[in-house]
Amino acid sequence: MADTFDIFAADERITVLLEFDRFRSLRIAVRPEGLVRVRAPFGLARSTVQTRVQAKALWIARHLARFREREPARRPAFVQGEAHAYLGREYALEIRQASRQQPRQPVALVDGRMEMTLTRPPDPARVRRVLETWYLEQAREVFTRVIRELLPRFDALGVPRPKLLKVRAMTTRWGTCSRVGVITLNRRLVEAPLACVEYVAAHELCHLRHHGHDARFYGLLALVLPDWKARRDALRHAPIL
Image 1 (cartoon, rainbow, N blue to C red):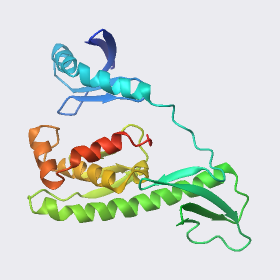
Image 2: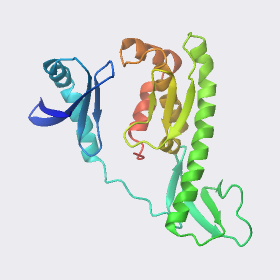
Image 3: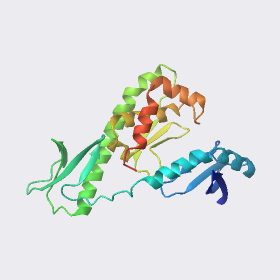
């Protein structure tokens, strides 16, 4: 059952939603809509949770402020000329209608344009479906390649290999790694620069050795990706999520 408590950062009062679950570590999530959610292990005293979260109050306040400063996310209309990102570059959507059979690859990147060929009227719903299918295919291909290229660095350090890679749309995370070695990456990540994709993939691969975000985790991340902080900062400023 969810509960709430308040923490304080300077003069700001922040309400926190608390839930207890099976995870072994305390997890804090700051959502774009301003929700702060904490998931704590069963058996951990509520007072201990409050103390630990209060210690992170300034960090939480900074994230909330960053979300408030952002412009409202533009909802795509999926129409002619609209800009869509792929690996950090924006492409103008160009929709063409053809009378012949639908091509196997209805979306192609050509000279700064994202060309889409349809055999049926290009209403926004249909354009969205075709584009989402294309993005998902590209994400699987790019993420698989990036992880394959990173694996030798982790192999050299004796880090276990992932059991499976999944790609799906997520609203609050770029990636996750389960305790059984399943890595899940956010489909939207393929819109970010390749350096950012590599950062998230390396981050999740590090979780195969260290589940938490302690000094050992960041030490491993620095070994395999020395400029990870710059890549993380670039991702934080990418207008995607």
